[in-house]
Every structure is written in structure tokens, then in C-alpha cells.
Image (tube, rainbow, N blue to C red; front, side):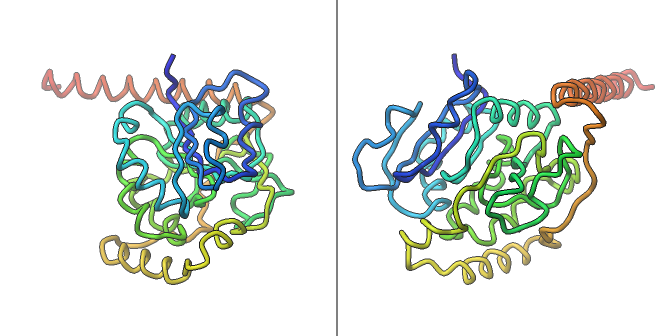
Length: 270
């Protein structure tokens, strides 16, 4: 049976993705886009497979341009780095919370022992999730609509720098509740930042990429959100992630019913 969720992974020889399929039945399909030199490596692990050398984001942009049917087949898309440690149970919960809270753009929090760039993205155990103005290129999750809005940017920065400053404006359409860091499902970033990307692509100029992307989209957008923006979150308050998810679904259903009543009232001239 087809899943609602797709992970598209740019995988090298030492990818940690085998861990992601252990601990529960995966509620996701896996597209491995292998960038190494061993023909067929990891192919047995994948729902879909290709071999495509090059940097992460421009290659994902090219992949999706060549496989547009994927955008209509799935509801949520995760684009993790291949050095994230997690299991299927954690990733299933991550996707469930993403859907349950009606998010457009998110990422799992990083464990406190991870290599990291931004304090904002480290797990805060007090919360199920925190609404933010920023997620990182390391592990973003997109809804279908958000991915379609952001996809043209993927090939505009070979290093990926700058893309995460632009995505909140394109994906969230001004909603502060559409973007979140999901604390209930942390993953561990196991390697130093940028290692394989820059080693395998020495021609990259990340600072120039960031300047180009930010300048281009500042000309079209009122602002680019800074990464240290946080708008509060959903507290655990002694409840588990499943209770929080049920709360989110009840809230989502109540909002849906309220909008239905409003539309019905307008149709009846009330």
C-alpha cells in the first residue's frame, strides 16, 4: 500500500538510513538518490533509487523535475542529511505530528549531543513542538503545497546556503503556526557540519550562494525571517506525544467544522 509520506535522501556510502527502517513498520517510502561511486549501493533499501553525483539541493531539484508525479503521490516530504540517527518509530511519530498539527514546513529537533549550528533547533523537552520562523536545510519536512512553492529555489543554491532563510516566506504564507521544530521526535546529527558536501564539491561557494538567494528573494518579499525567531509552542504538560496529536486533530476538526458553518451561513444569506 502506498504511504502518505516520502523521504528523499541524498545518500553516500556511510549513510545511516538503515536505522530509519528499524523499530516499527515504516509509515513512509524511501527514495535514495545515491551520490557515491559504488554502482547500486543502497538500492535494496529503497522504494525508489537513482545514482546522481553532485550537491544535495540542486540534485533534489533536478530529481523532482524529472519525477513530477511524486508531488501528487505524497502528502509530506522529508529531505534529511544522511548522517542523522533515528529509528522508524521516531520518524513515524514525526510525520504523524506534522500532519496532525497541519504544518507546512518543519523539522525534527536535534538531540542535545548533536553537531549543530542554531540553538533554536536543539530539543526542548518541555514541548511537543515549537512554532518558529526557521528550519534548517539539514532536515526539512514540507507539505505538498509548501514543496511546490519552494521547489524553484532548490536549484538556486548549489551549497544550500540561504534557502532556509527564504522558505518560511514561501511555504507559510505569513502564518506563524505553519512552521515548527518538532521536539517530541528528536534526531541526532552525528557528523561535523558540512563535511562530505564540501569535501566532494570543493568548487562550492556557500557564502556567495547565500548572498545571491537572499538578495534575489528580498527583492520580491518584504523580509527574510531571521533564524532565532520563535512564536511559542505546544507544551507536553505531562502528556505524551499521542495525547498531543489527538489534541491537534480535535482542534483541526473543530476549525474545519467552524469554517463549514461559516460557509453554510453565507450561502443561506445569514
